[in-house]
Image 1: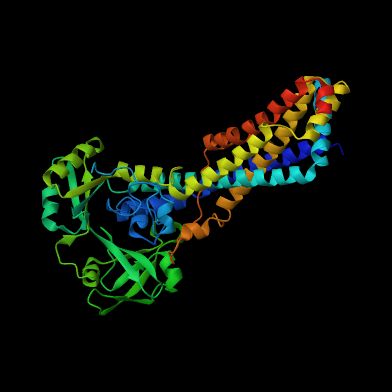
Image 2: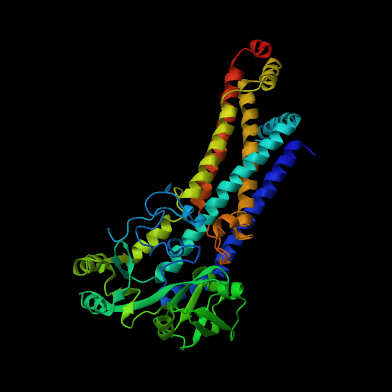
Length: 97
Length: 378
């Protein structure tokens, strides 16, 4: 087999897999709609304000509710105790204070 | 058309043979390049899917939360604030929220305890999130023991385990009755953690927030738009670890491209000289180099992006897990909905494939325009 044929075949397979991933993503979005709606309903029903991503510190469990003097609230390179604190971006000023 | 295609195929055949001659170098290049794209694409897919999920799920968040601040920290809100806030024109309802954190010494985990506004569990009963159920091995009907503020034990019955599908918002959640909440934390009647306001006209939320601050200067209103904005920027490229990953990946890529652009190896220059001497045009040499760059970068881009997709949406970012878990012992197990931004994929493509291909062509163009004799001698 010519090398160029092999090259185009490889690219073709990779492109087909990329298309399959795109189809999978669309299918999963369709399938995940009910679960997403369930989460949205729970947020509305319970008046929740945050996603449960990190449970190790108050200011990373509820970043939107954290007080303004918590670590990592001012700039990205401030010393941080918890690993999750260094994953989050500094919060935009809230409430104009 | 046929001749043109045949010509391209011949050049690709030659280019691939040339790449295979230096297979050690080129294979490692392909591997590192794929790894680089994989890392960048993983971060992009994960953060975008999470931000998108947050923007959809948190649409139902309260329109405004009002906290009381004392000495720069949260303070409990007295009930009279409710009446004051309820009287602001434009506010339709004001409800005191009861919520807080409980540290469980058994599992070394922090739980979020919340009293729902409606459908409160009966006193003595709780509903728990799937994460708590997993870490405490607790199921419906089991008893869970808590330590009250005064050190006395408090036993509550699990009436429900919240749906695993809601884990992204409820993994560490315990829904409890107001009565039990106050008993557990020793919170006086008439005091609340914060206040939730409903505003009649969504356009007036900012005006109402201003009125709240004017009326009660020791409060801090947090609007829904600010909650959504926080999650929009939360995994921003500027955030701590992400900026470290991105900058090291970008630096590695610059070193790559620089190595290519700064010049060709003696062997490569000799090859170009020989090709020119046997009658190749400068355009043929450039075409060969274009295919060389395209073969490496396109293969790496497609393979890296596909691997990242599998990593993020099939394995729930297993490689980033230790960092995401941090020191927490209770970590939500969730599968992200694959929201992919075509804009991000296009950006990744233009930031990796295009510069690499250009960086491969430029030094070759310089070598190809010099006299073949002097190229071979040098």
